[in-house]
Length: 373
Picture 1 (tube, rainbow, N blue to C red):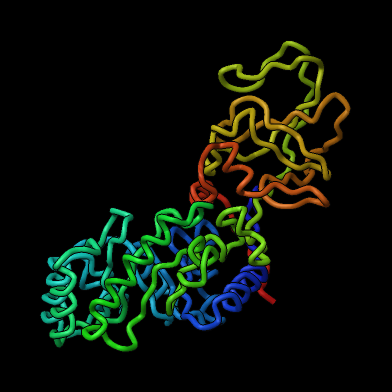
Picture 2 (cartoon, rainbow, N blue to C red; picture 1 turned 90 degrees about the horizontal axis):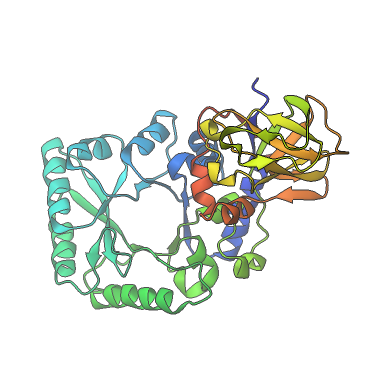
């Protein structure tokens, strides 16, 4: 087994799901498992969530939905991204719910469903301020798409949805405006919409920022995996990180004063020091922007990454008196003793979002799953 691997604690995934369910007791839950469950493993995490009776699994594309179905997962699946007309038959064959983001898209779905003599489950997407996909909340097309969906023998209107753009901010004004826009649409067409239609807009930040956002289904993503949705909101749920990135010391050497380390000579030893090499690099998805910024934990001590991160390795300065041996555990993300490195810490250093770092952790990294029980 490769000495560098991702450790996925499924027990913590269960804990986070149950915490979210308790926080949202009167709503359905769509668990976002897109992008390989944010790097945690699409199939393995989805199987655990199915055991927990999650109401929906959320993917981005039909290809992810097909993986779930081919793995034997029966839970309803909603593809949250824009669709390609030539793939609609796959949605129908594998019973994946579709976002209808325009009248033309709805017509494509209906035509293919009629051709195949099948019924498509659809969720109408309303754009309340994200400007990504969806019908503008002020558009006259909303009434047309609802009526067309309800009048067709080949379409089943299951849900109506939108998406928050700024739900993790301490300034909630835009989120509140988006919610108001969405509620106004639902209220305006209340007499047209099915009584049991699923109404959903709240992502992780939206779930925590206000219970008014919950409606009758929520869509947790990052908080499901124990990742902060705004540090000002962390106290609302006892989240536990699901993923750790671990490696081991592969090489030890003394670097003399004045000698540089790695490509580009971006770091030079100011005095004789001890440097160890870790078999992990940007070929695994580690951001090179963490060069000379990131840290690791070795033997319950935090040490800095020095020099440019290479494709397959990086170096760590353990100081003139540091102790490390080949084979010692190295924690890049996770906890060792009383020391920890959070994914959000790395994100700040790399000037990005935690999810970007997680979704870059690629398939070259083995994933080891700790059981949920």
